[in-house]
Amino acid sequence: MGASKSAHFTDEQNRIANLLKALAHPARIAIVEHLLEARACICGDLVEVLPLAQPTISQHLKELKAAGIIQGTVEGTSVCYCLSESGIKALLTFAKHLSTSLQNQQTHCC
Amino acid sequence: MGASKSAHFTDEQNRIANLLKALAHPARIAIVEHLLEARACICGDLVEVLPLAQPTISQHLKELKAAGIIQGTVEGTSVCYCLSESGIKALLTFAKHLSTSLQNQQTHCC
DNA sequence: ACCTTATATCGTAATATTGCGATATAGCAA
DNA sequence: TTGCTATATCGCAATATTACGATATAAGGT
Image 1 (cartoon, helix red, strand yellow):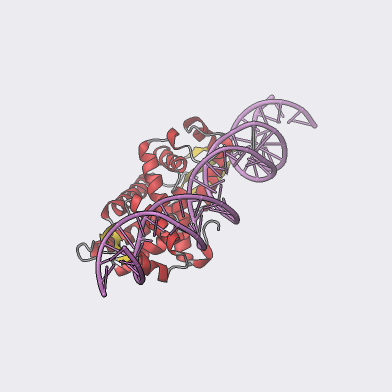
Image 2 (cartoon, rainbow over the protein chains, first blue to last red):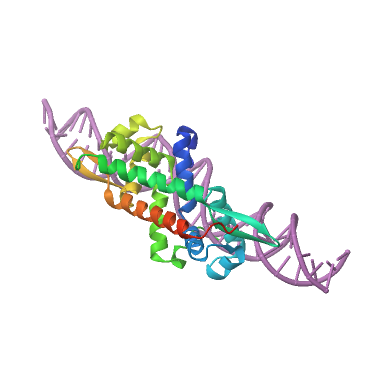
């Protein structure tokens, strides 16, 4: 059959998987990196920087926003996007969880 | 046209995107969480714990291994899997990079 | 050698993602 | 209102992922 049976997993597992999925594309990594440098930008800026068409970038922005990684506010005729705390905090929390739990495991097993 | 044009992005962007993609599935999150508790397990253990068939789990293990998130060593007729430092370190480094860069941005922009 | 156990791979169907042209929507200016 | 600019959404084609039955591979045990 088909893809991803999210119903069989816990809410928490689905939540973190969706967060990671939102970042799991080079274009969206590039968008985030651009925001780290520029602090804020509009969709049109990214169209000039990335090798993708405007509708494609708009779609990537939508996914990043839905995952809480960026936020956007309307400013006249354009939308100003910048990084959002919540998604990045969740990512850091998960990464730290993995890392510290791994440190606490006694030596190697295999 | 089709999916993901990785050739247009930097190696680093593709690398981190692939790492995140390897974790961006609830079944693979569940496998990692199981390994955090059990420290090590074989494929057969996961078949009893997860609502997925053996070939599916074997495939997920392969992807986690390819991304450097787990490692496996042959032990007789079975394979012992456990978490690997390299992938988890890379994830933590990326998450910290995002988090500290965001902290350094002056206040809010939008 | 034969059988059992454990995992991996193949092949394929179902589904999801990606990308973009065409078009819709929304704000602003004149 | 008309026109311009910026973004979002629709619809579709190309591609990628997911899941699993069937089968292959490999290591023991007897």
